[in-house]
Amino acid sequence: DFLNKVKINTSLDHAVLHLSDIAWFTPDLQGITTHVRISGHISGVISNIKGQNMTIEYGRTTLLSGNITMTGLPEFSNTFIQFKLKKLITTPADLETIPLFPFYDNRRIQLPDFMKQLTSISFRGEFTGFYNDFVAYGDFFSPLGKISSDLSLKKASGNDQFRFTGNIKTTGFRLGQFLEQEPLIGNLLFDAKVDGGGTSADDYKIALNGLISHLDLNGYAYRNATISGDL
Image (tube, rainbow, N blue to C red; front, side, top):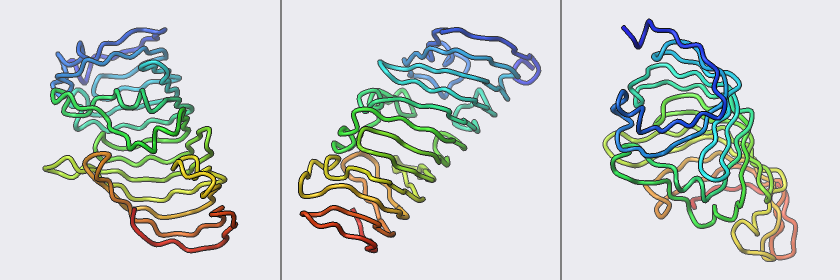
C-alpha cells in the first residue's frame, strides 16, 4: 500500500516540479502543464503529507512560504488542505496564468479589470479546506493599502459558479485609484459583510452590508455611514 505505508522524509532546495509528471499518479491533475520550484522539508505518506518551512515559486514573481498539510492525495478533488502562509507575493499577471480545474479544459483565472490596478499583492494568513470549498483569512497588502478578510468560498455542484461569503475590512485603502476615479473618490475605511458569486470576471455580483468609517468623496469626508447594496 504505497499511498498509506511508504514514508517520505526529504529536503528540497529549488527543485523543479512539473505537475504533468504527477498527473500520471493523480488523475485529477491530467491536462496541467504548470511547473513550480520548491524548497523545504517534506515528510509523511502520500495520503497524509506535510511540508515544513516550504517555499514555492511560480511564474515570474509569485512566491509562497509557510507550512502545509495535505490529506487525501492522490485524489486532488478530495484532498483537504491546511496552508499557513507566512508570506504570499504575486501579481495580477501571474494570477491570470493559473489553470483552473478540470485542467484539460485549458481555462485560466480571469480577474476583473479593476483588480489589475493592484500591481503587486502580498498576503499573510491561512487557507483551510478543499480546492473548491475553503475558508481563507488574513491580510492583503498592496500599493493601494491593506485589506483584511475572512472569507468562505465554495464552488456550486453541477456548474462553474463560485460563491463567497464573509467579512472584509480596509484601513486607508485608496479606493479612487483602485477604481480609476480620482480625484472624485479618495481613501476608504470600512468594515462590511459580503455575499456574492459568479462564473467569470464579467458576471460577478456582490452584496455589501456594513459601516463606512471614512470615505473621501467629491471633496468631502464622510464618516460613520452604513452601506447596504449590490455591486
